Amino acid sequence: MPGDFAYKQALIVRLDLKMGRGKTAVQCAHAAVSASNEAHAAFPDWWKHWIQEGQAKIALKVPDLEAIMKLKREAATKGLPHYVVEDRGLTQVPPGTITCLGIGPAPSHLLDVLTGDLPLL
Image: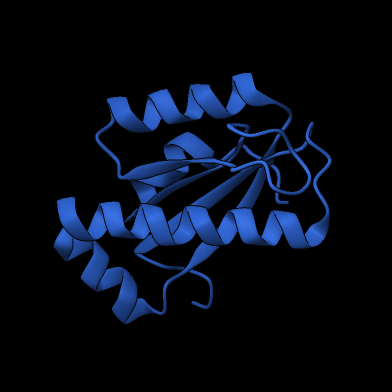
């Protein structure tokens, strides 16, 4: 069934920062690449299957820093590959601002436990 993937990656963006579309896209790209690198190192089989399936991703939103950090802690507790993006502060947000979280690639059923109730970006 289309859209039914065994492995996927979630990209979670903070809405309270009110970043522009381009800035949001770039922050998601940082999260996608860096979380993928984490998965490749720690879970090479997951990463390989995800690559072979077409690198499914889902973009989601949370209201604020507290929500993104809660998800980061939950991903760490569950042993899922993840990466928190801290911006360099060259454009729209101050240096060190946490903008985005990438989780996975990981088995979809494990990722859905954490992110299944989040709204699409």
